[in-house]
Length: 157
Image (cartoon, rainbow, N blue to C red; front, side):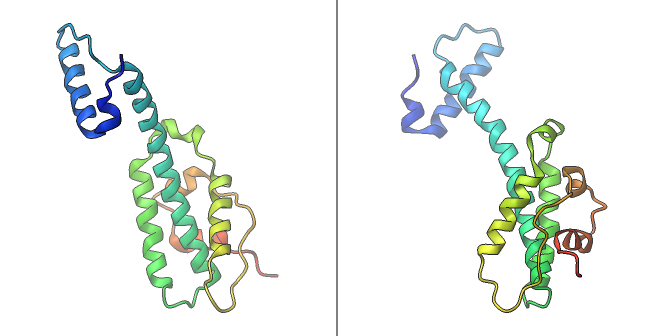
């Protein structure tokens, strides 16, 4: 029977479940593990880790697009620093099993949509509508910020 503590106080519920699992792992007979909610939370935890990496990659792309669109903007230097920070954080949080679950073209499209909705002011340089960047590109320590900015910039005629 699910523990209503799950709905009332998630922190206490999670601590209680952890203790019950420790007892179970130690060989003690435990009958009050909230299996249904515990299984759901473990699944959710995995999905949230993927979403965190996707969000960091989207933020890196969005900042690269802002620099590409407005290279002379006073905030450009700040945006450049953010690109590296977001990519470093994504690299640290990424795990190999995420490779098949992270769709860079979708993340790129979301970042492009977001930056196009921003009111950056003044004339803007065009951005690429699609990307050939890969997850491996974005997670590589060798990816130079200028190269990423160039990769999101539309080619000049």
